[in-house]
Image (cartoon, rainbow, N blue to C red; front, side, top):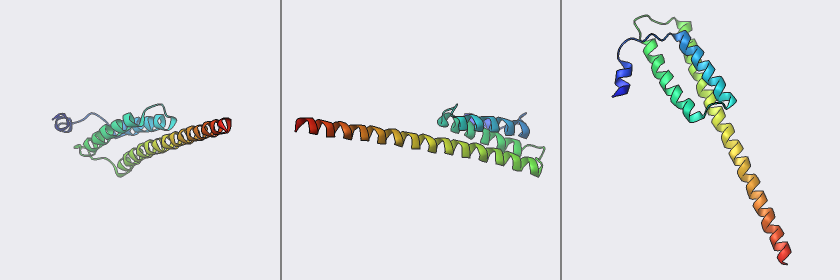
Length: 113
C-alpha cells in the first residue's frame, strides 16, 4: 500500500540530486562502508524515485536521463563487486580453516603412531 502512495503525486527530487546521492552510495559500497543488503534497499528506493523524476511533468533532457541511468548502473556495479569481493574473502577464510583442520588431523595421526 505504501509503495502506491509513494508513486502518486509530484516529487521535489531532482535528477541531479539523485545522481549525486547515487554516486555517494556507490562510493560507500565500494569502500565496504555500507552493507550490500542495505545498499540494495537504497538502490531499489532510488530507482523508484528516478522513475518518478523521469515521469514528472518537466521532462528530463537526454543527457540528464543518461547520467541518471549511468549513476544507477554505477551503484548496481559497485554493489555486485562488493558482494563478489565478500564471497572471495569468505571462500579464502573457509580454505584456510580447512587447511588448518587438515594439518591438525595429520599431526594427531602422526602423534598417535
